[in-house]
Length: 174
Image 1 (tube, rainbow, N blue to C red):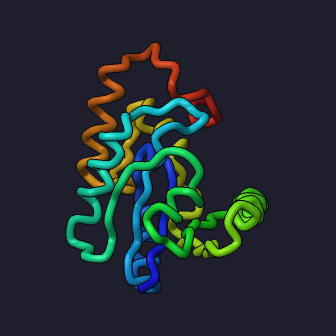
Image 2 (tube, rainbow, N blue to C red):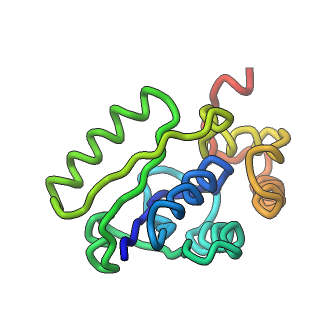
């Protein structure tokens, strides 16, 4: 049995993530959506919320499971007996970052492979930061995230108010 880990912050999970996970589930016996709990960036949602959102997305996928984790991804893989790390590639700039991460992970644990799946064309622009920014500006994210995530984003940004400092300013405000 080949177990794969798809790690990320998933803040929030979006259709690009879902697409990569479901495609990976056709390649591997089991895919673990591994929600990282302490990234080096500000988060909109808690680890428990992000796990719950992902669980809802994959409740009908029998070989996709969701869990949280801390520490090095390769250590988590060893802990659960996973042989593969799945990553998604959207645009050329992703390749350099993912290539360096794959080399570092291989240096840390040569027995864990990294498999990169290229996103479908309709998801190439999609990122958690894009979703967060659109939602923070009360924009329509219904085509980017599942309904339960859209509702949670609306609620969260209503709680945070206009003075929130989680989502940085970018060109979408201009």
